[in-house]
Amino acid sequence: MTDKIDLLGRISLFERQEQLLRFEHFDNTDALDVGLRLVQKAKQNNYPVAIDISVCGSQVFGYAFPGTTANNLRWIKRKVNTVYKVQMSTLHVGALLARDNKDIEKDWHLPEIDYTYHGGAFPIFIKGTGFIGAICVSGLPQEQDHQLVVDVLCEYLGVEL
Image (cartoon, rainbow, N blue to C red):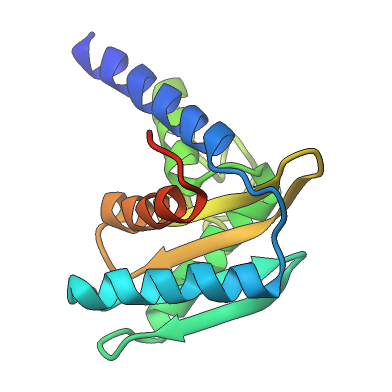
């Protein structure tokens, strides 16, 4: 029962993050600013991550630290595909699947070769407009990938969670 309560709390947290971490506008300049903040925070913490920001399916920022591999880029592609499909963070997707005891491929019909529920990708929403893209980090344990994005978005948007 404790696990179920914890899972419901996590889902509520992810929903809150996705509601509060929305932009007034988002263009290539914003992508550069957010991307460079992600790079700076990763550098400060010696995180060997790959970073991707895409809008309308096109990459507008990308960076890979030494120590990352092509495998990180494959994870980014799968994470970003998931965000574009369901318009929520990949860690949120994983929590929903766990809560419902579902499988992303069998139950949601999203092949694992192209999609994943591992944390690190976060949707970009513009207030009054809706979903436009994704911010993704790969290279750390999934919770840390997710938290890196959330921390930078909180700082950038001036939001306290």
